[in-house]
Image (cartoon, rainbow, N blue to C red; front, top):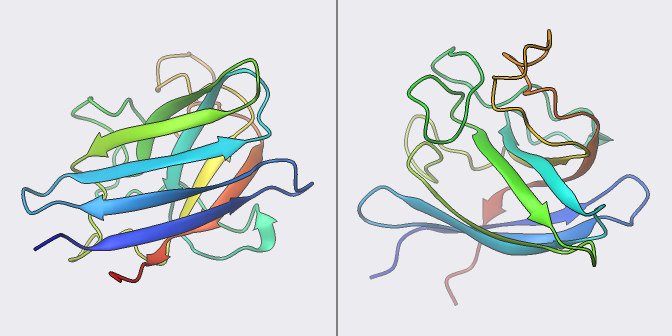
Length: 157
């Protein structure tokens, strides 16, 4: 039997950034994130789960990074990181980012589930908490929120 599945449809404020992401929680606890985002500027873009699934004010109302354990910002493989810190995605010269991530900190079930929260794509690279900027320890200094989507359960059909 397959694990839980979720989906997030990504849109940006000016509708140039869009795409979709699928989330699959495996029985071993890893959640796989797969998808495609278009309309990005080429290069690295911060990629995070934010605490709120509220898009009433676009991506700006999704709150801070999902951080149930109250840690500092970090890289996906760091011991000290927000649960929602998924690092960067890379857009090619065509503005397309093919997303393929596996992470143990973003379950679709249980106390720290990401269901109902938002995934956010940022304008700039995430410095992974190492940039020395005043925002490095909270946001990775990843800049504006250019695309987001609420994570919701997906039909298993």
